[in-house]
Length: 96
Ligand SMILES: [Zn+2]
Image 1: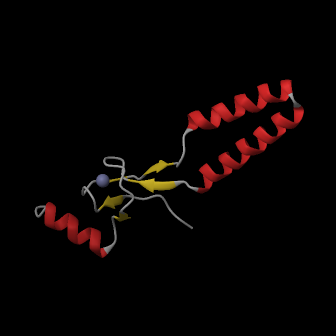
Image 2: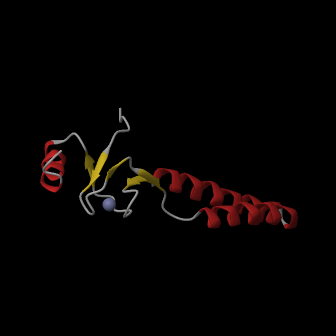
């Protein structure tokens, strides 16, 4: 399986650990949860439907997780130990 290691960003040239990103927003997720709780007080069916929407939204966000550069947020990351990354690192830092 995937082993977290140093990644090279080919967009900005940063070398580092990738940052995890999720699509969508945590604010909307919280809003859906609150709406489903209050909705359940008014109408159990409405609350249930809103809760299902909340769960689907959570699952979609978790499924859309991707790793991106910690500096520029670009998703173009390549493993730092790959030949292409080594070439790029040597070109930018000829002394190392
Ligand atoms: Zn970058």
